[in-house]
Structures are given as C-alpha cells and as structure tokens.
Length: 335
Ligand SMILES: NC(=O)c1ccc[n+]([C@@H]2O[C@H](COP(=O)([O-])OP(=O)(O)OC[C@H]3O[C@@H](n4cnc5c(N)ncnc54)[C@H](O)[C@@H]3O)[C@@H](O)[C@H]2O)c1
Image (cartoon, rainbow, N blue to C red; front, side, top):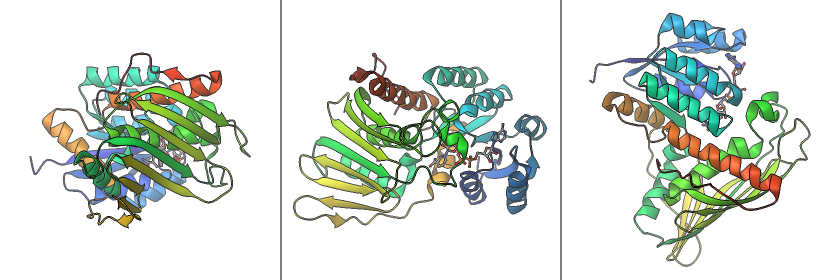
C-alpha cells in the first residue's frame, strides 16, 4: 500500500487551487499531474510552478490524463457538471464546498458517485483545522460540560474588488456570504455539536455594491440535540472578525478559527496550547486517500455535503417567508 501513488488533476486554477497543489506536493502517495482552467494564463502559471500539464478544457484533461483523483475548485454552478464528468471516468473526487447549488444537484452527484463506486470528500475544511480539532476534542471530553449554545460571528469585506464576479451572481454562486462562508459556519456548528440542524429562523439583507446576493445574514438554528446556535455574518464595510463562542454548563470556549483557541471555566479566557498538525488540505487529502484505500466513506461524504446545502436552502426559505422553517424530516446523519 505504501508504494501506491495516486495522481490528482485539479479543475480551476483560481484562489484556492494553490492550497490543493501545495498539499499534494507535501504528501507521500499523491502526485499532481495536471491543471485545467478556461483562463490559460492561470493554468500555465500553476502548471509551471508545480511541474504539471496545463489544459483549457477539463474534459480533455480527464480523458488524456485519466487521473485517480480530480479536485474540483470551480465556481459553484459548475461543481455538478464537473463531478458527473469525473465520476463517468471513474475518478475519485476532492470536491470544494459548497457541494453544489441545490440538494437536487447534490443528489445527482451522490447517484453518479455511487454508480461509479468512487469516493468523494466535500471540502468542509473546518474539520481539518488545528484549533477546531482541539475544540472538538475538548467538547467531546466534557471539558466545558454539556453544550448550552454556540454563537458564530464572521465579518469581512465581501464586496472587495478582488472578489470574482461569479461569487456575487446568485445563479452562479447559489447565494452570497451565507452560501460561501455561512456553509462553513453551518458545518462547524453541526460538527462541533455532533448534531444536525432541525429548525431555522433567518433574516438577510441585500445592500451590496455589486451583484444580487445577500450581504449579511442573522441565523438562529436549533439542533436535533436541542442546542440553539446563532450565525451572524456581515460582508459590508467594517472590522473583520471570525469567532465562535461555545458555551457549556461548566465553561466556555472561544474559537478563533485559523488563529487561536481560548477556554474559561471561570474567570477570563486563557489561551489553549494547540498542537501543530498537518496543514488542513493535507489532512483532507489524507482522509480521501484513506477512504480510497479502505473502500469506506470520507469524513465529509457527499451525503453530509448535501445536508449542509439543505440547511442553507432552509435558511433562504426562512428569510424569504419571514417564518421559522423545519428541516422537513431530513437530518445530517453522516457527520
Ligand atoms: N475550503 C475553503 O476554505 C475554500 C476557500 C476558498 C474557496 N473555496 C471554494 O473553492 C471553489 C473555487 O473558489 P476560488 O476562490 O478558487 O474561485 P476563483 O474564481 O478564484 O477560481 C475559479 C477558477 O475556475 C475557472 N473556471 C471557470 N469556469 C471554468 C471551466 N468551465 N473550466 C475550467 N475552469 C473554469 C476560473 O477561470 C477561475 O480561475 C469554490 O467552490 C469556493 O467556494 C473553498
């Protein structure tokens, strides 16, 4: 097993592609072979940097290279068509989040992956970040008692000029800050709590300087285990923030994802010593490789990616109707 080397072809040479290539380069058992992007300059730059072949057409790349794994790092509206094509060539998939534009599209991907008997990891990076892993370990060990609530806050300039236009077009992105970053928060809350969302109440606003997607959202969630949680996200001008407060009966955690973790069991927060782990994308690829070798599911299988999309759809349904919405009997059982 140790000598097996799997090849990876990356579709999309945009902002996140370098993280994929960087992880692949640092791992045994993986070798990047190609990159495809409609933007030939971007594809060729990455190809030169990582010593792989460049293509404009991802279909041609898959037909020629026959990679073991395809990493799909495309605008959201293209995830489904690329995933179906990759599955039709028997390729395993590292499929960026959010999984697709709708639960119906996710179903098509799930069906195609099953038929082709290929493994899929949906890139819910939250599961692989060192501070988050430590927070999960502390929660599961009972360090802060039984969970009472979580409050997740994220602010950033969502309309910065460097953001590609497709992120701000609803038909291409599926939504604004909540579709892009809110899906991280939905995932983080469900995963940390080990419980699926069952009820949603949400408000959104549309005051962006570009496009037609929401620029903020305030979301109240209730999980199957009864725990309430909030997500507050704003993409207008102001100070950036990324903070999750996790409150239990015996203490609290303050999780600054990608930065630090803090604990209080009385008195002010104290910083937790977080052991350094491999980079999140390396852990993601390790997870996928293990599933390929063992024939089982990844830790973020497509069924779970679909569950996150279902919650997002319910968030938008609540915001549109002005009423709380239930998850219609579906749950995220595959966390
Ligand atoms: N896991 C994370 O933390 C994380 C972070 C950033 C982005 N993402 C996700 O990664 C994906 C890509 O995001 P990004 O920021 O890299 O976007 P991006 O716009 O920077 O890159 C997308 C690339 O796809 C190319 N492209 C568009 N249509 C194509 C086609 N038909 N064939 C080939 N190439 C095509 C574009 O030219 C562009 O270079 C999205 O799903 C996004 O949500 C995940």
